Length: 188
Image (cartoon, rainbow, N blue to C red; front, side, top):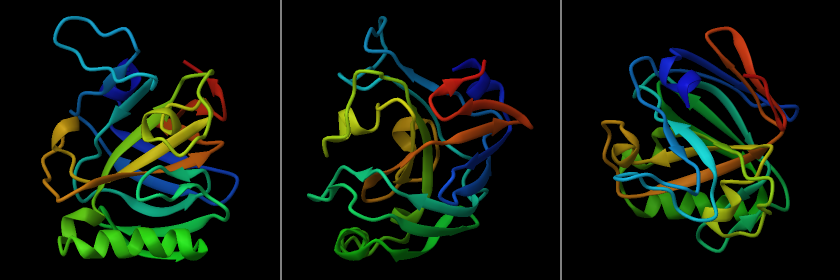
């Protein structure tokens, strides 16, 4: 979690085409180890580290190819692409009925903040499997997730009517120009 807390400039890429940049300088990372200390939260079975981007700084493209563990969507049959501008998802393309279900659910809240890029989370549990259940899917090793919607519970400042996680395989993460993750390999 230290690299996430101390990092300012983040870049995420993936073989499928994810290329997202955001700022998080001054934001404290949240570490969920499955062995919480006093006053800490760590839901089972997820093992992850996450950080909320500074609102309005995320820019680029996400190719979501693993899971959306909400709304009965679960593991994806085909990937979908999200365009991100000034911290918000501006479009979702592809992905068939699963992506359409996500778009309808977000739009049903009638809250533009539901499109906010609220979180970068890194799955670190080698025993977790992609099942369609949020607490397992977001902890799968060799994945990242971008949480969208509210960021308050993570240390961000934006409130929204919901929070959904969009999970991607085979990430590369750079923090301040230094590669810290390539696929399942943590390079710290």
